[in-house]
Amino acid sequence: MRISVPSSHKLAALLALMLAGSALAQDSARERAQAQGDASMERLKDAVARTKGAADGHPHPTLPPAASGETRRRAFEALRRRAPAPAMDARARAALAAGEAKLAAERERQAKAISQALGLEAPDVAAVAAAKPLGAPKQWVPVLFVSSSMPVAVLRTYAQQLERVNGVLAFRGMPGGLRQVAPMAKLTAQILRLDPGCEGPNCAMRNVQLIVDPIVFRQHGIARVPALAMIPGDPTQAYCEREDESPRSRFIVYGDSALSGLLDEYARLGGKTEVRDAQARLAPR
Image (cartoon, rainbow, N blue to C red; front, side, top):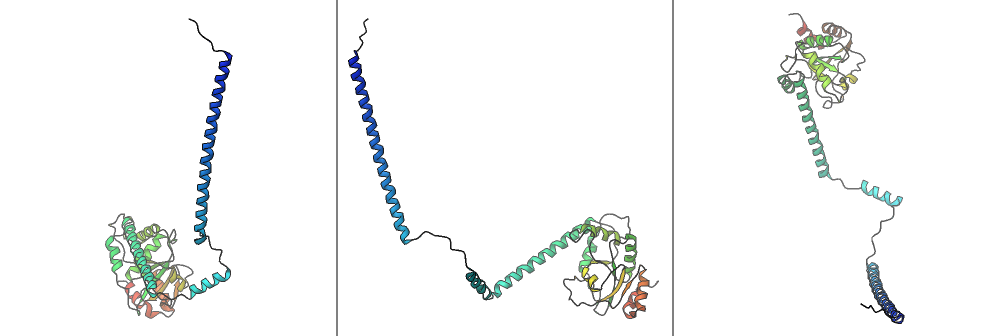
């Protein structure tokens, strides 16, 4: 079958028509893009003009300049001249008191739990909490200043003697620091247990109060231990609840001696009235 082939003139004409069509299409696309770009620029100009017009009536917010020294001075003077607010102060004091009460209750709960874990009976803890003051202001209480560094056997002997005279063992601080209660609770159990080999919550304890009170040490100028003082009133009262000039012992007796010997020395210094009751209680029966 014969296939016809176009001549070279016809091919040239066809190619020219195709190129012309492509050029027209490109020109049309270019014109449309130019028109769209012009329209976008016009819209942008209008938006900028509207924003500028609004800004003339409502300026943009800006950060204030740094306050000068004079401005700061006037501000502080105004604070100092502010009117007092008794109601607000009362609320703040009430909130502080409520917080302190809650903290005290939590400390008591933790101390009771530690006491039970280390063998201090719950009834004994309750009895100490409900105990009345040791006496009227005219009565004197033997207070023996001691240290946790002393042998436990010596502390147990003093506790046995102080129990007979309603005396008190006083420590300046707690072993391990004031933030650690467990070492002091353990030492207390070792001192007060009637049977040193007893373990658990059912161990019988001596009726002797132990206090940790650095203030009473400083008030009496205790430089070494053991030392005996006869303090009027209730030496077991928390030092934060006592007055700054709380009653003090007239004399301080130092020496590693039995309690009876310390009482005798106190009487010799001129304190016969203070030690009379304690000596009577400590006398052989």
